[in-house]
Amino acid sequence: MPHKILIVDDHLVVREGLKLLVGLNPEFVTAGEAENGREAVELAGELNPDVILMDLYMPVMTGLEAIKEISEKHPSIPVIILTTYNEDKLMAEGMEYGAKGYLLKDTSPENMFRTLDAAIRGDTLISSEMMTRIQSYKKEEEKQRVKPKIYLSSKEIDVLEAVARGAKSKEIAIDLKISERTVKARLTDIYNKLGVSSRAEAAALAIQTGIITLQD
Image (cartoon, rainbow, N blue to C red; front, side, top):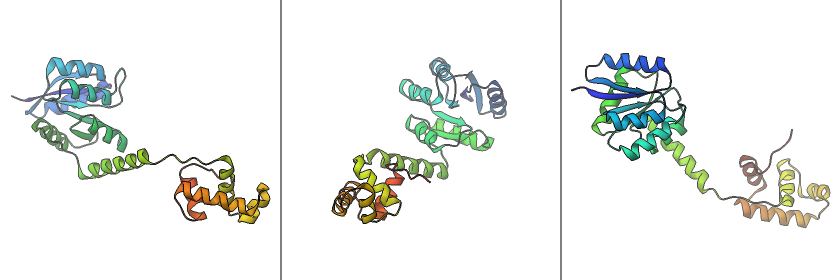
């Protein structure tokens, strides 16, 4: 008996093309089609397909939302993302929500059927390149989440902006109408807050994190 596929895409021409493609392989059959995530969730329960091909950007309910709900309600039904968007964030979120694979719409029929087969067997088939990108994206996201908030006073920011422009302590003191000792004290506080040990590091980190923005 051929494996049943549920095709989910908001574009009729895409659904029709996928149905024609599926029809070329006797091991698969199109069990149904949906034009948004909400319909996909409903048909998943009604049709109990062996695998779902899911677009991401759709009205009513997005593909990511549908994947999450299907994974919760019907965990035995594997979902393969099939999209035109080659974005690390989408790949990572799709896999986190329970997708068993991620394919671009310009993939070869052979690769698509190979991925469907793997999903039905309970495996996750994703290229090493995509897996590397997903892992890199997750690591960067984790860095951003754990990065501590840095709070500098307006007076410290004034000093830091001057430093970033290349001003010396004496020049900063004159410009801000404070003593050099005060400038150096504020620099020490800035270093401690930013976790750096030099003017160059402080300026670079401040610009990188958006604490200061230099005007041309």
